[in-house]
Image (cartoon, rainbow, N blue to C red; front, side):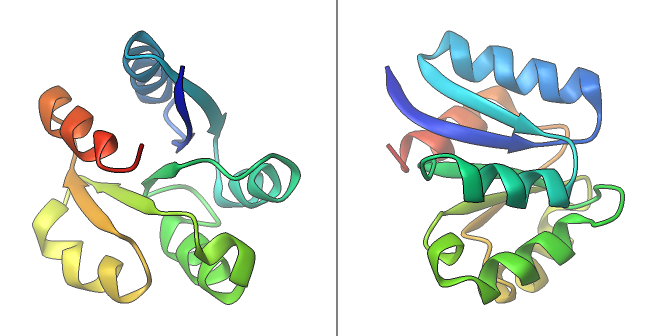
Length: 120
């Protein structure tokens, strides 16, 4: 089994699709539906190799998650790939808050798998 990934997505269908795709590729997947749940998951589980983060979560949103993550030295080491329908337009701001990469939504399957593979 590949390393674990935390998917932070408030849309149940999108979350299930991402989890199913990643599990089908051999990844262990955890899920969270908002920034609070994601921070709690990260603080109560072994660190995943990667977090996939929807920036447009309901409160707290992905931006607030990135800010809280950056303030916590232990969490700041976990790579984050931000997901956004605005994609490239939000890339500079997301990278400035500590995201490691940004992918446009809807997420292209092949682009996602190539990106995730870099964090094995």
